[in-house]
Amino acid sequence: MDRMHFGEHSSSQFNEALESIRNNLMEMGGLVEKQVVDALQSLLQADSALAEKVLETEDKVDKLEMLIDEECTKVLALRQPAASDLRLIIAVTKAVSDLERIGDESAKIARMGLQLAEEGESPRGYVEVRHIGNHVRNMLRDTLDAFARFDAKKALEVAAEDNEVDLEYRSAMRSLVTFMMEDPRAISRVLNIIWSLRALERIGDHARNIGEQVIYLVEGKDVRHISVDEIEAKLKK
Amino acid sequence: MSVNGARIMDTAQKIDDKTPRNETPASQSEGEQAMDNTTRYPDQTVGNPFVDNAKMRMRDVDVFYGEKQAIHGVSLDIGKNEVVALIGPSGCGKSTFLRCLNRMNDTIDICQVKGNLHLEDQDLYDPKLDVVELRARVGMVFQKPNPFPKSIYDNVAYGPRIHGLANKKYDLDEIVETSLQKAGLWNEVKDRLHSPGTGLSGGQQQRLCIARTIAVSPEVVLMDEPCSALDPIATAKIEELIAELSESYTIAIVTHSMQQAARVSNRTAYFHLGRLVEMNDTETVFTKPEHDLTEAYITGRFG
View (spheres, rainbow over the protein chains, first blue to last red):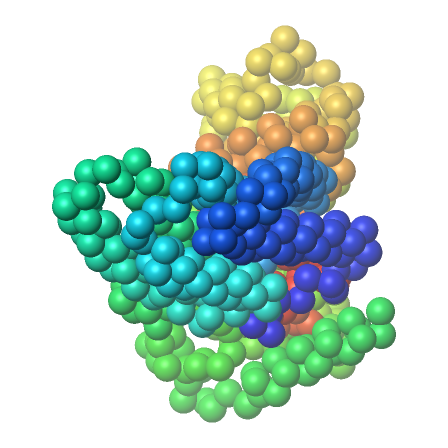
């Protein structure tokens, strides 16, 4: 971790460019985190105003994504970054697309919130949404934290958390499907909850992806598409 | 800035601490043991300075200019048909080291080279060795194109003539043509082989010098910043040429352009203050270098 000294280039403009990229990434991360929290809130409390706010934030997130990509392109073209600088740029460009997707998923949840506010509450599933929602929210916070501090260990923990979220999602799905079979009149409303859970599960995947980029950034190892145990083994090498 | 400087000083200090240059015990300086690379320098150079199919093996190379030591115990291999890039900040000893490999340092009176340097089984500093012969086996291309004030033809034919590689005009013609072709210059000069070499453009002159170097069929070609006086197009041509030449020759190149090192070489050696800090696959050096100093240099944090 002591290897990550992004502010020490001979060229102060290079320092500033990397600094700006990191700041914008953190701003985008903050915005998306807020989006997830608000989307959950709007669904759980049937708050349409808050849901609308989530949808409005999307535009801002998209603009930041494009801004950061442009900054990264510029650094690649003008500075030919190498080693940790190169890994930072690669990790950031991948992380922003995951963040943008997380924004999209929270917008989905907000839209489900709007529908449920109109149609009336679902008879089931809120406990699961709250539980998995909190879990995923923490993962997102931790993965952004890991990025800010170049903390590969924390990023690995996020990857491990994702496995739990997947389990929770599957078990929630089973119980909701069983419920729909028992009470077909509630299918449309329960489906809204199911889509929201699906979105949350996807957010967990994206948080894990960002964590994998942090590991690449810090350790220089590509740990995508392998299990947590395999990641650990690879990092020990 | 001062904080920055302090950190670099600190890391530089660290490597000094890590790599104490002990006096080499006499028993290690000869024979098999000198070639054993696994146990001798646990802390010195990080990465993989040694290869199995080495064309040139250098061990414990120290170079002094008078009292001043310019190179401290550098050990590395250059593999057969491999392109090795030597990089590092000015004054780090990379050119000095390169010049040891065909004894160009002999021309500097106060320069003294110690250690084991071998081209295959040939000790480069064997007093009985004919240096002219050695330089035919290990050719060199310099920073500034330096064609002889002769015709293009004679520039290339000069080496084969003095080494007696071709006796008949017909043989010589063929060597000149193939050398110029390998250097990618034939098509541009075939109609004016007897006009002066100095009349060519800088990039063409450099390729002429490369043709002159390879005309004597060397085994190793050393290049000391061969592109630093050339424009990007000429540079690209030389780099392309390096890739082609590496099929038949072993190449060591000193360059100030890190991108160039990244583009042309298989392995990269990073020198710092006369020490070999790291030698690794070029890809490793440029994506995940092992040593802090390498990282700092290639990302532009000092130098």
